[in-house]
Amino acid sequence: MHKLENKISNYNKQIAIILGALTYHLSPEIIKYISEQNKNDFSFFKDLFKDRIDFKHYLFEGSDCVFPGVRRYISGKGAKRKYNPEYRAIVDDNTFPRYIWCFLINGNGYSGNNWKKTKLDEFELAHIFSHKESEMNVEKQSFNKIDETICPYGEFSSAANVILLPKGTIRPTDNSAVIKSIFYKRYIDLYGESTLNGRSGFKENSIPEWYPEIEWNKPFLPNDWQRNIDKLLEYRKERIAGILKN
Image (tube, rainbow, N blue to C red; front, top):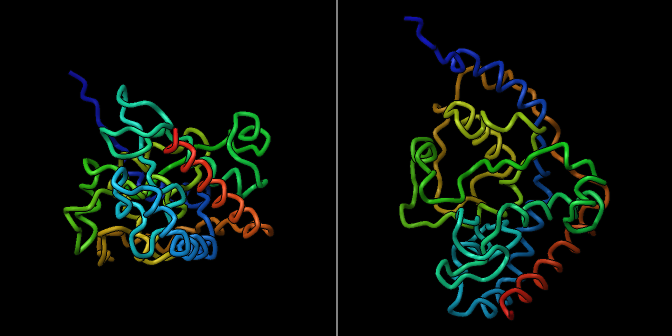
């Protein structure tokens, strides 16, 4: 009988080098700016959420969460882009993270037309760190300290955590522990650990020895980024407040 052999682990290095050249991360300047603005907006969201949403899951110290109170939609459960008392959150099917890239590129929110107009439709969003409690096994192996009590919902719309990859290339970041580890390392090299909720002490020995051979894309920093981020952050306050009022 012929046996099928999964040989993907033999090509992790080649895959990683290709992904490094294809991936777009946001500039650390943008992440730092959002984190600072989150401090300024902390009281607004705390008062808005009251006893309906646990704001500490989203606006912890150092957070760059763009849409506090929004977490990933659970298939078949809950109304999308509406407040769900059962989950104490607004649930979403990956629409809200798209606003980050849309606003940055042309200062407008997400729509099908704008996604296509900006050529973002040629890419897919990928999350580096998990935004679900059930999918943190690789992270637990890669960090010296993991707070087991955290709910990583803020990672869903964390600007540092939402990267772009061309369509068709996203799967290795989901399924390979080695590929995940190189994206963890790149994230920490760019932003440090302050934006991570309950994860610290990254194990440098968890990455392969060939990691320095990866040539990463330059972080994305358009000329008018600050003006567009200000528009994004004002939009998020209006949008979230509007959803909770309804």
